[in-house]
Length: 364
Image 1 (cartoon, rainbow, N blue to C red):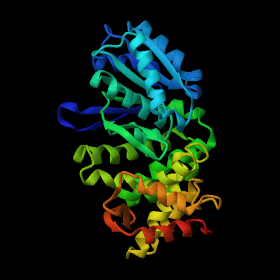
Image 2: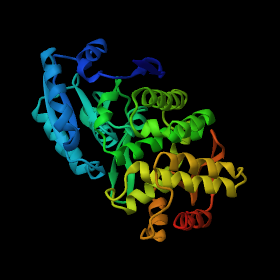
Image 3: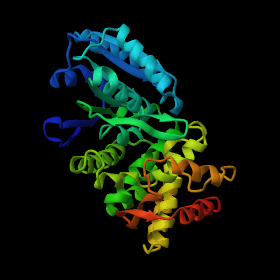
Image 4: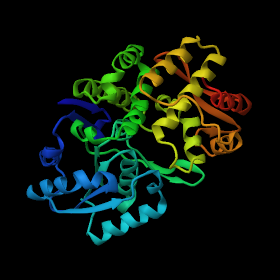
């Protein structure tokens, strides 16, 4: 088992990464003083619940926890205000109080939704992240929780840190191949913004990652979480440094919004966005290898690098105008300057971005 710490003073918390941790969840709950007197609400989705919800519920109940459950539809569309209201109803009916804990059992959608429910319910109660996807190694760390608006992704949200992150690698073995590939986008991103050596490691070990070889997977997720934990510890609320974690997300979130949050997976959209950012970086003076290596590592992990032809460029540009990173007429972009190094540019003109989006349709 590997352990990391997100260092936020009295709100610091651990990330546990290993095999078989879900079967020992109550031990970690006890260690972190999750209340047994107040109800615990586990929130999962329809895909994950069928495999992992009942065993987790039974294990916690056998340890003396009072457990309620809620299952939401799988997919990005569940990150909505309507779904949030339904969860609050479940919490009220289950008797959750200020000492209760919400548990997010699932991927990034469940983590964002459950975390925001915990942040909003009674002005904030405790919550635990139990991610079950590769993609969620990113979203489960750092306390950014949110739901979507039809015009913009994650525009309604809060910063609300978990008590702990319990990452059982065994849960990843049931992921479909497309979800595995999409999840690796955020793993690669952490290398592209922070660690050139890790990017090369991902290229060399891509086949092992795609086949979910436990040692390679554990190492990759530990490294990805390490970067996220370091950045969050330095800048919890995205005043400056934390914005580098948005590499590829300005274009990627716009693609997701135009797709209605159901045609393309988050990691796929972010992969295309990172190619766009690499192209932008080269135009702004970065060496050509920024583009070639970015494309190499994404393709090695089976990720898309081309924007599908039927996506409307005007609609994507309009979606970017609603992004949180659009400020005072200019776009804030995370732009690579070298592999493993990025800068935050607040002077990127919309015309240049439009050209980049057009080029994404013509990627080889």
